[in-house]
Length: 114
Image (cartoon, rainbow, N blue to C red; front, top):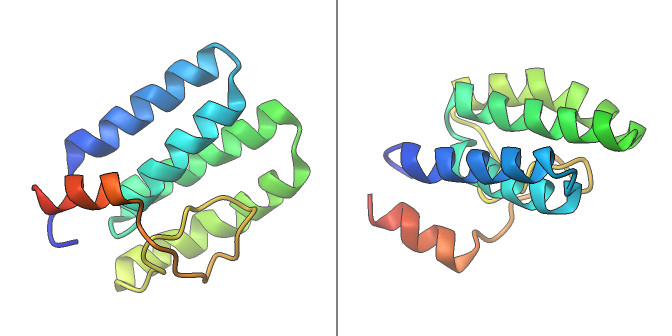
């Protein structure tokens, strides 16, 4: 990714927050994963997505997610700042923080249109 797609990131965050308001944590989580993929190369959006994962973990009382995000927040900030992130990683504690993953086709198209 060469340029940050602010609109795509903000749309996913808005959808995640809407789902959170309805206590639809599974849907919120999916939208935060997508926001993470879009923003992981940039310090603040990357951090923002991990803070949202942390919030979902807290609301679910999911201690694995909470602990995973507490580790990912500072490491993700550092990785973004240094330009070393596993492209496509969905960001949740349910996957290794070092695993590269394919970017979903619809997101790839959005990112290419910038």
